[in-house]
Length: 192
Image 1: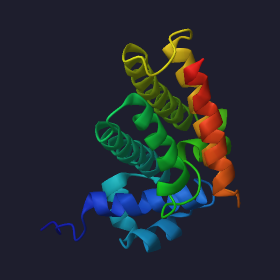
Image 2: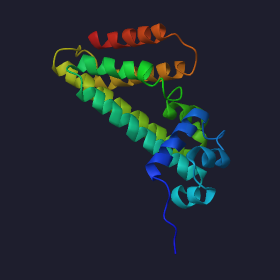
Image 3: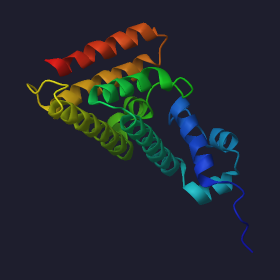
Image 4: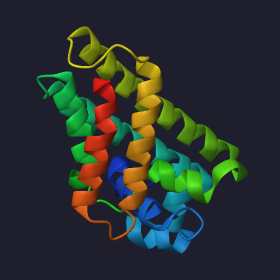
């Protein structure tokens, strides 16, 4: 008779996300995962596969969580400018309870082109963020909030780069005033 699972997959996957996000892929051992997730080694392998497969699932879960949060913040904004400011504020302040930085950025730096699956996942995540930013920019341009002299997709790439920089700075002891100043100056490109 097969034993029933004694854990919720999403709950333990979120614990894996937290650990991988905090420590990175290479520093995190199976023993670390078993302890942090609170499941048996056999359950980890039976449910998630090997460490690489678990990492990809954790990356996917991270992306879903961040995208859901960003969409929620955007829908709660009355203007495109407010939506963009909300995204910058989220990256600067609201992630204080989470590990430092961005799991996608951390993965790109740690694994880069050495791991095709991780590279593909981070690239797709970056593209989704740029598409989201471009959508906000287009809305702002149509509403007359943002200048139309520049292409929304190119502006999104530039603002995404600023967001990545902010997330890297969050891995240091950077002053929040500095990060807000970077955000404010970055957004000024929308008015030119």
